[in-house]
Image (tube, rainbow, N blue to C red; front, top):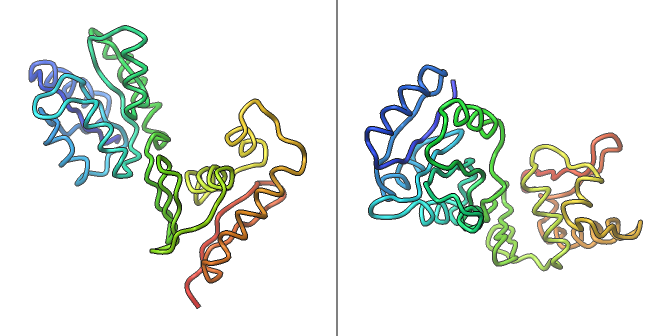
Length: 225
């Protein structure tokens, strides 16, 4: 069963959505305003969130942005009557993963929710894995209370490793995520990875990066000695 949060102030629409989702084996909590939504997000372990934009107390854009600022990586699909491309861009800029324009077919909502529930969002900007903390927005990293000195490229590599943890990231995916279409020379990743490992050397050997020939690069954590 998929556990969801629906944030919608139109109670009739909310009731119809909840009833339909239950038929699809989806358990749905409900909030009718932005403040209540943030409270439930902090308390519940949801696989996806359906978030209306026009909400009382705190609108959906603000709710989404605050959730991401606090490290919430639950996928969010926004519901709205605004159908312009610029409106969608604003939604994505605030941390949404998907966008569905009202009126919509329930079958489409279900299909999108099933796809979103299989992954975590890449929109959150506060990453914490073990003793490591990374603030993507401010481009800073910490090991506990200690700041790590990393170049922007090294931070981008660390971000991909932290988002994937505990899974490894293969070389091709890492290069595409960090450099995009601008393919680096053959030594660039090797040099940047060496620099990142050097930055992590202050972690008292608690954090390391392993390379596995058939899998890629993976963060590894050990207990303090």
